[in-house]
Image (cartoon, rainbow, N blue to C red):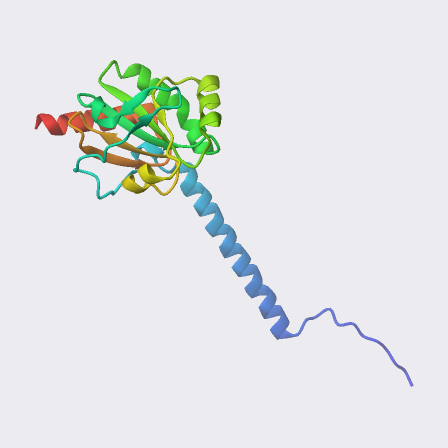
Length: 195
């Protein structure tokens, strides 16, 4: 009597078919991930991602308080110039990346526009240190209760609003801003007013 243990290298058809299915699913997921990465790498800068807001075309909700440097600030006191109202936090990486862009925009505005920042879920002392280290001389208001963010419908930083010299919200920008993008939005708004 001859007994042999035969280990067949051939898998049953059902197992082979399920292995192929798993491979195709893996390939499909890899393609989807690569497409998503390509989309993120080639998307437009955040400054051009103007989002809808019920505030656009309406008077900006009033904001007033003491800036972290002690200045008294009122949004309505900035009438006559464009205001970039920027909600940010020091822990927010996109906020850190956009900070030099806001500094450049503020420096280049030549009295035609200015920046007003509102702290989003952060500590004023940390924010003051951030500005001391990285520059920026615009007023920064604390929003400890989140009321200002709620009034503007802000979900998270960075988020900015361009407010026209007459106090009307012109646009809402979700994500990082750039000097070029903000300058373009101001120019578009000025062109609309001239029409």
